Image (cartoon, rainbow, N blue to C red; front, top):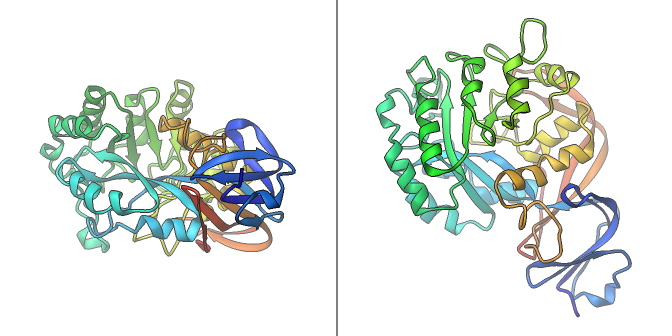
Length: 383
């Protein structure tokens, strides 16, 4: 067999398959054809020497906003591919039942980067101006939470992941958990998980967490400031620990205001790590402080999270949570050839969280190449 592409000599990190070793990866017909050592260069039409890099399953950014021009904060999904080597992005509720078809037609179907999505419980999708005086929440009037319309949209597009709700003071005029209860009803009727955004109270995260079911997602778990999930003793609140124990998945979701080094250190020292590392990248934070997924991953790496766990939280875990572990987040032979090539650079690198603290890190994940459906693409940096 003559392979289309051979990635030669890289350090393959594939947590889903338990692989952490030097190996060659061959691609043929848009799929992973072989993963082994000693694959001859003559057996491939194109050979890429990656001996100075790590080769991982295509990165999955589980929390983004990519309804470009459909919302004020939407960014282009293919820009995330170009910057970070992200091969799959998940849009976290930019569109609701009232405009998801437009998002699907004009963005999802035209993107080279794979786009999956949560549906916003708010019928018109997310409201979020780019200036403070325009930040009017989509849940100011909870009548926009149309359960029947959301369930019908999931029935029409079964690949919708689940239901998203922004349950914080910025998200709406309500000061209680009503939007989360409505989103949960829609998720239950649709047979899908729910993603709950919490932020500046009211309501408090501790009030919302008990409403999440096993398999649901809580995002922004490392946020700082008022309403964070640390108790008076500086440890994670009991509700968070209990929720994780019963199968609620914790999503980092960096964003413009939702990641604090101080909170992250306290969580990590207490044994609470994010199940999923995501950037929550959108127009307000793509030029800082989030930048993108590899910068967010680098921050966690420099806070002490092992490289294996960092890669796992951006590949295998999100793929499994999406119910796509048979095709995404793995380099299993026969799966779509979505691959990211990274270099771990050493030096002194400044990182900033969402509350203004600077961290000088010693390692940076530098994206070099991406393979999307078998096609090789050089990629840049997100910082």
